[in-house]
Length: 369
Image (cartoon, rainbow, N blue to C red; front, top):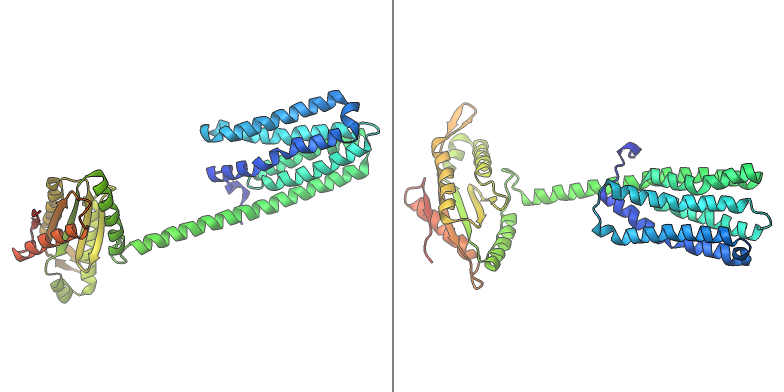
């Protein structure tokens, strides 16, 4: 169960509060009209009735207008305070109005209507503003306390006054309980979203290297290919393959081979750091990099950085120095609507085959149309 001090009013919670408050706005003027115009009360107390109507309708119109314009307003602290204040003004005006009703003589019928309306509006408001415990408790206090004071002090109606006190306390307990339930559910939902996102990331990642896996690469490649067709921009693919990787596994063991693949992965992520670059393990000791909107010269420079790094660096593993080189195939194209994306992969793969067949440890580019 969450503690109240951790219940920060986030934009989502604030939006929930505003949504919950919308439907209740119309009930205040409706309930007030029923109370005032039943039994000819309005004609016996026209000044008070008009004043009560004007203030109530004015606040409700302001709240409705503010709600309509809310999407266009800057969502800052001032906007939030305006919303909270207008929410509390409504029950405060109603509570004071009800307190005045209680001291009026020979108006039992209207007083019964107001008791019923006050209890109903209090219940609805406390529940509606459950996401904010302070707002829910404040609503309860604003609508109930004026009547309680009037009943106990000015009218000496102790039975009804004590019943209002019991209801007021009951609403406090309800607010605390339902507030806890709301935030517990919200927290559970957030945890579920985090776990879902984590599972999604796991499903898109290679278990050994932490790079994107082939499934995710294929999805990203399809998206970038279609985008490049629409925008008539280039897209490049770079395929890296570790030279003589089988010898590393045979000589140093598969654990050493795994560590070497992790070293490759870490360096590739350092080189290809644009947000649009996709670095993935394509299978075994083969890695693929998708580079949208890049010139062939820049892509070749990046590929040479990769090749030079592995030519000059080794992996120290359990007192042994592991060293090999890497071959790179590169292809770049501005796709046309009638082209299949596999063409680019095929061109990059052909360039890799060329690098392997020409002695390895080199970058080759497929320049064929």
